[in-house]
Image (cartoon, rainbow, N blue to C red; front, side, top):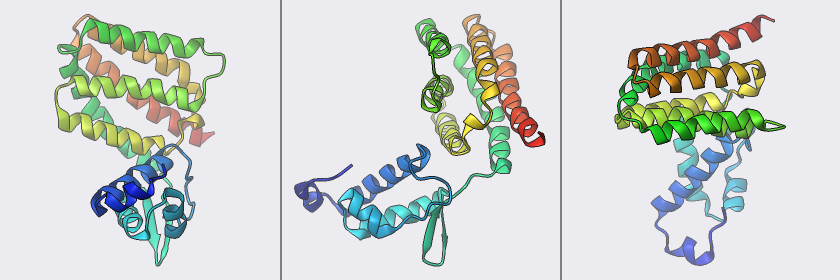
Length: 219
């Protein structure tokens, strides 16, 4: 994202800092800035076409969020550890188990149809990229969280999912087909308004992700 001279001169510092924050955050989450990459304030400012002050503010916020870490004057992209992911998955089981229970009686049949169609389309792809898998997985979990009607729950689920995205789930490709089947089972339980079963299936789904990570480490 490159701002025009007019935009840079007219935009308040807060909005420039927010633009820088969102852009660098996206670079990290999408893997454009990999773990342990040194982030140089001057280079980011040049790339964004901004002065260094709003970029400095943005980088400080990202350090506060844990996406970056600072040692002296050096700022680097934080690597997410396996232990971090496993802890996040514990929280997600609790939140999404409750979220899907609430969403079961609120979500529309049309939305369930859309989610199911996306799952089917994914497996019909000749080559499933990490980005395509993320898009479908994110739509599934985010849509259900938002359908819960609890905005705080949905926000926390989305934030936790963004953190786990940094782990790189292409490390456990064996989860692709089982994960799709588990998603479809959850959608089926929701379609039948069986909130308790949907909750149980969601929690088991996330536990199996954790188990797959542990099994991969044990190999």
